[in-house]
Image 1: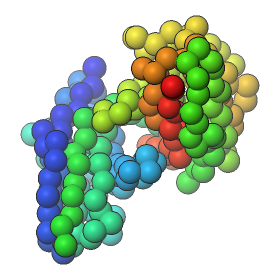
Image 2: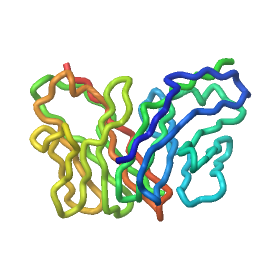
Image 3: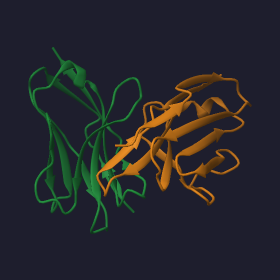
Image 4: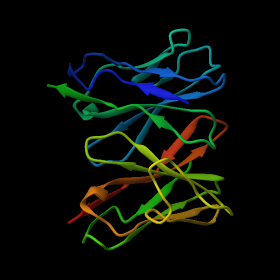
Length: 114
Length: 114
């Protein structure tokens, strides 16, 4: 079975500062994918970034980067230059392939302060 | 990328009634996934819908309560039957996409049962 652990229920960050959201995972699969999603108060799930288990480079997408440490089974999300619009719930998730479902962590609520 | 149209976006329903949620994908996909997100919680998988076969339900979810249809490779419905206030949640459909790098969600259905 796969499991995601997000230990930070809530985080605060000053506008324009960087913030790291923690995610650790557990899986017995050799091949898997790790995802981060943003969920604003509207409820939609916005895909942010993906990291494959065999990817040697850390994934980056604009202001988002994923600090992937395979041996430690961690996949932390780094948001640089935080903006007020970044305030939302953030979920880390794992899956085996595109035809298998995502397994989510409990999420971290990020609040960006002006 | 895949675009998923989910409707309704929100509804307020009387207890004891049923609501059918629709998801339309702009491309053919093998698997569609239905999730429930109870207030303040993470996403929990309800079932996996594969075209041409019965949906596979997760522990705690039964077909009589959450019947699913998957008539073709671009469409699926989830019905929430005999609703009670405990069914008040956001319901989301999702599909995998690409070689392994994407997972998209519909906009979500915010259901309130009174």
